[in-house]
Length: 227
Ligand SMILES: [Mg+2]
Image (cartoon, rainbow, N blue to C red):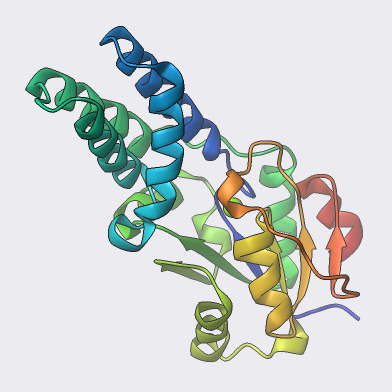
């Protein structure tokens, strides 16, 4: 049976995202190495602090840059203003990165929008996420946009309730087992999982065996599934 509503994740489902964070991570590690610090230490500290800082800093480019500044502060007792500024510039580069749609998205989204109520559902810094949405050519195809600080079972239920979407009439589509698929399944919503090679490692989690999860290779496969 076809659903009526589609809730669709944005980052690394509609457009590339984590690649820019990985590039920034690499730039930072090289910057620290050039300052004489261990590349491996800078790398592992940043991975650790980014996770630990989520409750304080949230997600996004500026949060990543703040974690970089924290790592630099741990490595260097007397941080230099010039290096702190370079870190900030790395973060701003990610914040303003171009929006590159993933294969199949541009052709498939308008067709889905002809048939379904469409909701963009993304987590992170509202200004950053809304900026990407406005830069993309997709905004007009979505009835609703929701940006939340964290995507979990409760925030997903909140979106269903706020928009009056019934679980059995709704499907979730996304690349993150942790943020997209699990919260949907926990709310009785069927999910389409589109694994992406560069999904952030923080987003991986084991999924329960469930008849409510369909895995497809790329966004264009939704046409065969939903149209
Ligand atoms: Mg995603």
